[in-house]
Amino acid sequence: MRDTLSTPRTIVDNGSMDASAIVAAIAAAITLAALYFTRRQVKTAEEQTAIQRGMYKDAAQPYVWADIRPHAQHASFMMLILKNEGPTVATDVSLKINPGFPSEWARNEDHEKFASMRCFDSLPPGRMMQWNLGLPQDLLPSPDTPGNGDGRFKISISFRGPNGTKTTLSYSINLSEYRWVAKTTPGTPMTIAKSVDDATKTLSKAINKVAIQLSE
Image (cartoon, rainbow, N blue to C red; front, side, top):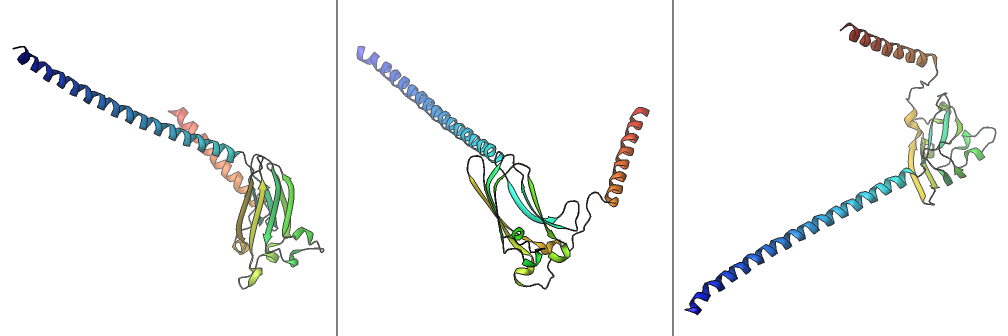
């Protein structure tokens, strides 16, 4: 009788152990899943931090560019422009133009100004350096001009930022693209009249809007 009564107890104990094992397995799975998502969150946070650091680093770097374009106030002159648009000082700046400017562009035998390589110790933020190259009709190539006289130049710029990192930019420009560009410049009577007309229209709209609001 005693052995017969003890059998159900053994079955109950086995059932309890099976349930405990299942609960433990579920808890372990939940823990592993939580660890996985925690690691994912940590990795994502690290990536975001790295991106923000990179953006902060890039934002603190100088940005030097060069171009050949019409003068901002006198479109009748073509200028070589070198400018630092960044917030910090650019050092060890070099500007190379290939091929070099034609000797016909030089005036009064001033060939040094038209050298294909220019170097500067530093270029502070906002500094813009300009060289007058000449009149557009003397510089812009004709459609039939072959070879190096077709108005294409490759500009290469290198400079260093505050942390000593060297940056190199290289791109091509084509002066023939200016052949049909309008020469309207700021400060001419036409642009002044247009600015006054635009300002008058804007002021009239604002006055009419206020008048309608007051009448309601």
